[in-house]
Length: 127
View 1: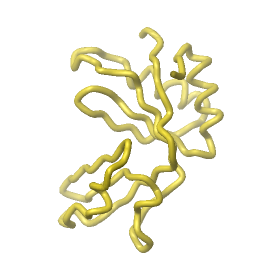
View 2: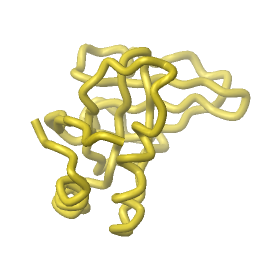
View 3: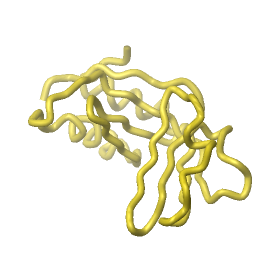
View 4: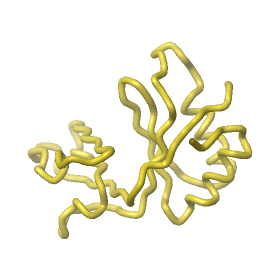
């Protein structure tokens, strides 16, 4: 897999969990450089700026968002794996999301420096 170009989105992010039948809250739809709302039969999962998540909502803050430079064709393989493998080797867990055009990888902000070093060592380029 060829090296990927990626960027770091500004700010601190949180991953929140609501009940599966909960309505999408207004704070999840507020303008931001990134947000994700995923509903399954078990939960409503939201990624949003940490400051937007109200107190009392079950959430874990302290995430940094890495955006891979897309768009990628749907038949292109190994893109996410090329990011996940060096991070796993460095002992860094991820929370991954994909959109129509690209992939996003969230890493704990306390591991950001190590994550960037591992990705650069694997040949990826920070934009």
